[in-house]
Image (cartoon, rainbow, N blue to C red; front, side, top):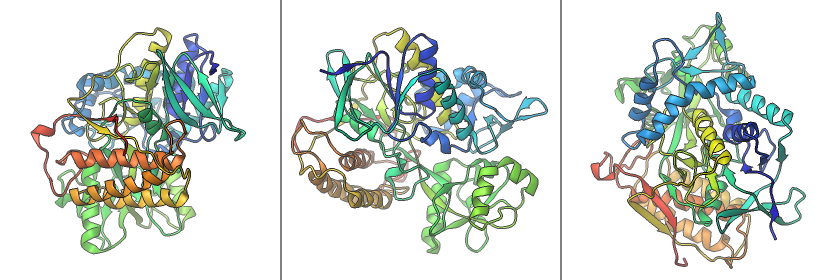
Length: 518
């Protein structure tokens, strides 16, 4: 029999999971936070750019909403985006209440500007350490409140029983698994950028939460939209390290190996164009030149301001022999943010009873086809608050399925389990064939190769639990199948064989578990 849980089981310890835990505790619940690594290890920790909210003079919720809609390339759920932008100031107030030390200038909150925002509305904490400061603050509050946490505990499966989901968790001591039957499960497991060879994400960001939910029968949407970040440090032997978009907001320029700017030829906004535009421009320049990298030139920013505004970036660069006040920074694009995921309604309810999702693992429709910079941390807060409310006062609901849903059949395989070489091959395959620029031939080839991987990695019986590599192959398949189906270019999804948006594709694409056997 599954062990009962006293309150909601929250899977993940980024901004969404920690915030839901704190708010549900304030509402009288007794949550438990489960994380597959340490409590402090999540994408939130590495978020440099900041968090967007219309809190400054001359700004407005309507302006933030317009920018979000514009960036989303026609696919933003307007009602969800209105929730995001209108509730943003209150959620910032919650962070202040919890003790997040946002940067100020002469007693007023300091606001920066990033690409595709019409106003300076990005709040920071510790300059480019915003994610770290938020994570540290929320984690400390979780510990102070005595909220139960379980580290190094992996969600292996979800099973629907009646009106609840049962969570199958690995034991931290490595001795098998256990079933837990909480009143509700909240997925806050983050994204899948780490499934790509070139990624700004920590290695743990491989999307297992999405794969586990899909295997249990949850509806997914928008899996073809994977956002790439244009300015990620590139040097052989060094880790990929995101150079926040805010550096360009302060005046840094992108130059090719010859020292020339090229972004103005692609978009009038140049360095402040949306991320997908800047990524494709850099990709095109690298293809044209045969070089591995272009350069971010921040030397026009006064040294004192550069080092005060971006202390983490500057320290990282100095550790790798670069003084950004004097030298250009070698960069190239990398996988960054999963826009799609487990479909939810505006209260975080999924298509499975008792299962909620918020943060990057969720597909709320708020980002459309291309996320506006610094709306990601905000999404975790706004929809985390909504999840906490409905955990406190349950009410029925769930996402409406899109008009078109692709069935993805399960596969019975050889049950090899974890295989590091296969995971590396999947990362290479996604980067080469399902990356910044895609086409039907490459996508179809990726789907076929992934089918081979799945036949090796998937369990031989539905009763067996899949290993991590089987989940990696499944998630890569979901991304590739959706990208192959969407025969147009829109936002972060670009098809060179269909280089323009098509009115017929101004709709969401669902993915559902099929009934066949592959």
